[in-house]
Length: 402
Image (cartoon, rainbow, N blue to C red; front, side, top):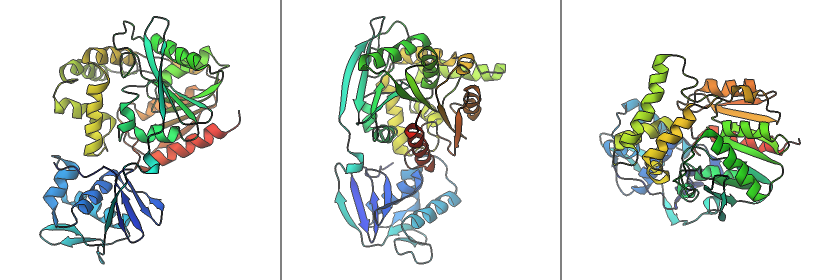
């Protein structure tokens, strides 16, 4: 599979720009929504505009070895044309060469933006603090403005995440209006990996340690996945310090706690049994299985990054211990005692944390606002409409007066 360039190349044609660094199509400077696979189709065609690109090559580049129905490719080509102001009748930009493939026929100029302003990495400062049990926790700040604390979630690395097409838009947009404060979970990333205690309670203490090290008195929390449960405990223990709560993809019950049948419990245990066999090894089948749960609509590039993230952030042994702690979480009773204004967002079709868990969280927390997001991904991708909706909702919510 030949990857398409993502080194900052910008293709300009008429009023349009195809920017590979920010994965964005713009018309007269205005952003146009493009689905991830459609964007990959465009990039592959524009990078090879000197020739006809066979259908088989395009399928291999964008979809890898997965089977793709002919109607799927046709729909992506139609969407690609619409994204750049073209259509199947005029074919001014993308021409179908019958029996062979497709070719870009527009007059295209190319330039290289090594670090366009929209994706320049913000200055990040990494420091360490020490938890009560002596474990060193790595935390970082980026952006300017009032504080926004992001408790650790599954699979992070303070340095690596800035390079990732899976996470960098989260960091960039959350740092835009705030000083974003985040940290690596004990046992992973730049925090101590040899921690003896990887319990849920230790995660709560690590949040307490980081905000105390920063000298924060009152602040909002932005939480993903397991971090939502950690924040619930913190907010109940320290209600005077939490101004607002934002939960995305969260749950009140871990995968084993919420199992309602022997089959569901077997499924939860199966995932944890498979981790030591595939984690950190050159086992693409296992890594793809795990990545596909988080990013079912991810591009090949995003899936590759997520697979590498598994190898970079922690060891197989630590991963099993962390998963075990996550699986047994239960904060149902505590959630009813939360008093901070709360915004709960959840993807409707994701497979890691069922949509019902988002509904449950919102129903448990008094006065919580619930926003369903149309996506199948647990980690929202920059190019999907759900990402723009999430950022808009979060900005409005955090801007409200207490």
